[in-house]
Image (tube, rainbow, N blue to C red; front, side, top):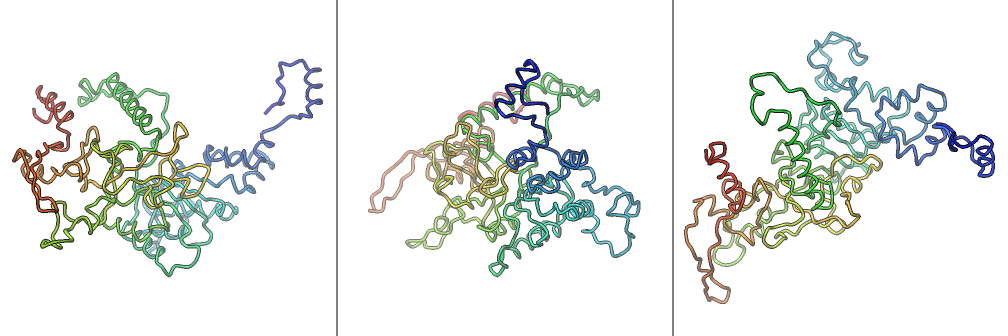
Length: 466
């Protein structure tokens, strides 16, 4: 980096100005020697760039190796040496982690986690491993045994771990390890990992400037396969995302009407794991707090029918997979379980937000939504799909809660409006007649708009009615 005074200024005047202001030439070494600047800059640099920078001079080597901030955030996802070449024979060699004799003592964990263990071994020899507080391993081969080491071994100091869409991860073993590290009798200071990104999709790759060529295959023929249609669809999606972000005042997808947030629906066992880890380890998912998961609301607790299930019967704990937006129920703009309000509700009610924070390695930083206008975060409405069955439009994401719309069970049984009025019994014994509410959701679409749009499209033979 050149002098702080522009070279366009006449030299005598520049010298006088520098002397008057006591300014000397500031180099890149001077900038990166500042802890604040290095901490803000290093997460944006790929690890390969940091390693290359350390090789340029002794001064840069000292900055990278001695500063605790250079490797505070470590993303190994794009590193080729971290990828396990599972298509090669076991005894082909070629990597440091595979130079040892391949015999019967080689376990599955040793093979699949070998590339990452080799990298961590190098970082430990260079005294850099303990500086890593945020570790991103998305898409790599990560075994449950390796995750257990992150949580229990003192040589690691990882606080935020991202293992989204990883390969060769034994979920059953990982669940056992999570139960173990979150047990009430666990040692003080454990587990070391406080936040785990596991359920959501990994970050999309950075967009490139090159335009994808149109495929010449027979399957590529058609209007929507043309380059112009693809570009138009991409811009429509960008416009929708921008509108949702503006309405929610944040780019955090969990606070927008984003619909399904997970590519793969988590198994029921994961809900129990989140319960056991509550207040100990945070995840990029939360438990559904709908009334059907509350025994006191899902069963009749008074009168002759005490203990019998209501029309919406009790559900086991489940992970909330659907983001409903900040507006709540289409009718009352709230919900029976009350939305999660950031700063007031329990921390366990908030998921870790994507992307993984670059500069802070705390659970609160990972859960805090960044507001576009600097205002307070909006309420968080999330539920599981079972609680939304028959009351949520999968296209426009409008939904109605149990207190405003009781037609979900009727819709599941007959899909038709059976009667025009209902007779209800008041607590004092009197009765009155109220209009029966019309069906709001049919086949996953709201009947007011999206179902009509689908029907109109199907009139031409291209939709669900064609």
